Length: 249
Image 1 (cartoon, helix red, strand yellow):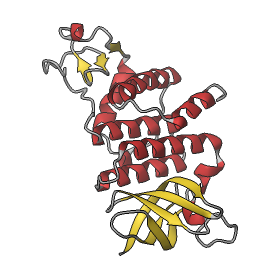
Image 2 (cartoon, one colour):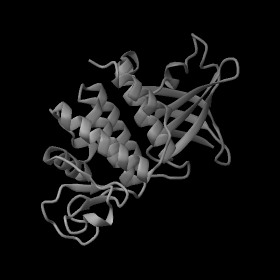
Image 3 (cartoon, helix red, strand yellow):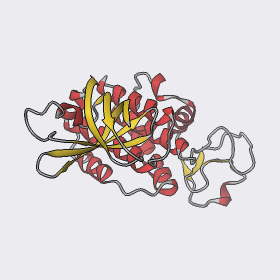
């Protein structure tokens, strides 16, 4: 059967002497693997379509839900700027790998696609990549069914002014329930405000955020704890980001 879909390349790997296999995140068919014959060749008409982070329209043939074969395509947004900048490429690779590892092949829904598209657009437009990535992490936690709650205590429902969050229990703990998780983390008001905003915000609505370095560092620590506790994924791209952080000025 011939399919025509809009998709974003979240993974691209060499296959054989001149071919590539790409993984597309699509709005209508979930995650799809497609073989692009000859895409490694310099003059291939498919080469540009297989570049990571590329958003385009893809026409491919597929039988019985297996690997598709690329027939033709058209680039809608190449996101070239994300590939030419080392730091942006690292963040874009991270969000793509995160989605790839979180989204199952059979899962279909426009949420994954729209949030990834908004994330890559935000990175391309110069918004703070760390804030963009943390908001995307929150959206992936929610999409996977592990979204934390910060509006009230997750144990008793109280809405006191406590600033303790529990990655293990999945959200805010009031002062009376903090004993339920001795490892709960106390955060500053600025970080708590961002977490609360992330819980409610769609990536398509993200504006330019000016966040203090110390708040971003604390936010990274908290989001890392939530991601490790709830999803437990070992991502190569995250390790690379950590290495880059050591050299960032």
